[in-house]
Length: 318
Ligand code: NAP
Ligand code: 8YV
Image (cartoon, rainbow, N blue to C red; front, side):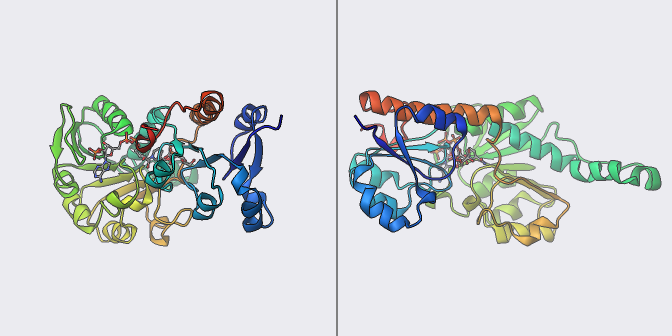
């Protein structure tokens, strides 16, 4: 009996491929010479899709796969998948929550320390011989005992709050609805920014959070303030951020995500009060293995009994 077909969008690890090959015949979307012809001929025979947070489910795939049943996404954020439309069609969309909380929170801490302690400039000072020729590196700022604002206090936001507690932080947050936590709630991003010295975005992307961090929020954060984004590039008005960093509206930033990835605003690349990483918050061998295992588990569970382990909220009733 032929194996069911799985359409792979984007890249996967060898471990994921090895685990999936016994169960599925895998078609790679990006290796098709004529994508339109491939989708027209084979789309109706494919019930399963493996994708990630970057590619989601493109419209031509959603249309061509008329018998689509399951979408397993390699990542927790799913702003590139129209999950309401999928739920209406009865398609089970699943993602990889929780297994990356620690890594993303650690990435925020890494960026926070790097910006506050001028890690990159200090490293350059040590390597270049400037220490011998010019003397000691200038004093930097401590991460200890800061007021920290978290935009989005979900699985990762709470893990960030836990990390911040270890630095003696006073924690503030903004979400649409207050949570049962011992932190100070703010009903807007501006109010949260004006109460803190360090602001970190960790909401989902998509329409409801687009440009949540804008010129007004950055102005409220103030000239000593630091901003960090480990959420989605769309959450921040990147042009306003470049402006705020260059004219001293805020003091510095650490950014893992950008509005037009993999393009990054040129202004950001030349600033020494900014640390940039190329969307790698979950990108360790260990965490990507856990994410990949969950992607595979969702697909093989669906194959065995029609259910998935970690559906997105919009598809939990299916
Ligand atoms: P989660 O558990 O669903 O938490 C999301 C939080 O954001 C909730 O507290 C939610 O509270 C809040 N929120 C949602 N919409 C909001 C809005 N319009 N305004 C204010 N707050 C809002 O999600 P998670 O697992 O923590 O992941 C969060 C996001 O991190 C993902 O969706 C993804 O985009 C991003 N991420 C990035 C990386 C990376 O590589 N940089 C890695 C993993 C995740 P309310 O519903 O009460 O508003
Ligand atoms: C991944 C992420 O890099 O989980 C997310 O939402 O942004 C990252 O963990 C992304 O999903 C691409 O695989």
